Amino acid sequence: MKFCLYIPVGNVTPGEFQSLDAVQEMTAALETAGIDGCCVTDHPAPASAWLHANGHDALDPFTALAFVAAHSRTLQLLTNIVVLPYRNPFITAKAATTLQVLSGGRFIMGIGSGYQKAEFEALGVDFHKRGKLTDEALETIREIWRGGRIVKRGMGFEAHGNEPRPAPEPAPKIWIGGSSDKALQRAVVQGDGWCPFFAISHHSKLNQDSGIQSVADLQQKIAWIAEQREAQQRPAAFDVNIAISSTDNFTNRSRAEAERFLDEVAQLQEAGVNWVTVKLLHPDRRAYLDNVQWFSEEVVRKL
Image (cartoon, rainbow, N blue to C red; front, side):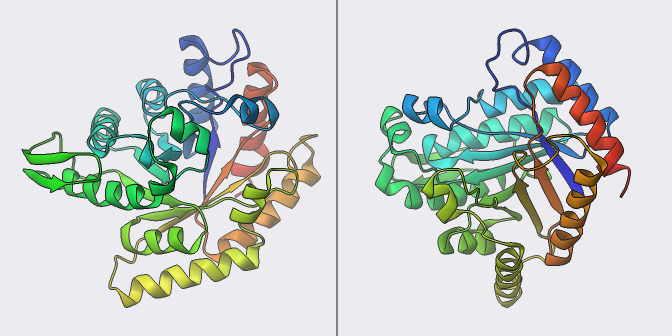
């Protein structure tokens, strides 16, 4: 089992997380703790009402992870997630391959279709076409990464023999977010992995409806993906990364909490999960660093 921790560079608390010193210190703590990867999310223009209710801030994911990459050597760098319809696929492909090349091949691009209508409108993207735009972007980005000339007409672009570089080998992995039927189908056809999240009872109805409902639900979906990939002769290697909220874990940093979490991890591994993503509590930077160390000692080293 591998662990990915959110690195809270999106947190706007003055002087705590959004500085070069903060990135250096948090990145060093993650590597020292033996954490396998870290992740950031993507919200270029969130709705104010959402942000001040139950939302969260976010830096540009590619730029933020570039700073983490520069101060690390082993951490896998994950977007959880990039909303593909927000950007022209050529721009996304370029940002991803730049990060892949300069990090020494440590980038994993978790992607999704998005859900904030107000954010789509602010970015000038048709919310109702987000599914088609996601599928088109996945297809186009894969084609770009294979290298060579691109001749392709899309919903918002037309390439007449353009040749974006670099075409890295290996290309970044793409993990597909979401647990809808369409997201599962994308994971089968276009994914190197799947990165859903558990539904959280006190979050929005959208979260509750779109999240994984139980370990049994998760296991059933993993089995379906595996069956479909085998039937379509897709590569056997496939990652499953489930995001677990911190709100019900590690509030007191007790041994009992750690044991309960390890039991949950064992169930997830049995279901077919090989990555777990955790968002540790971080009222300030010192607390985040202490929690990373505690997580290393009480969880990672116990495995």
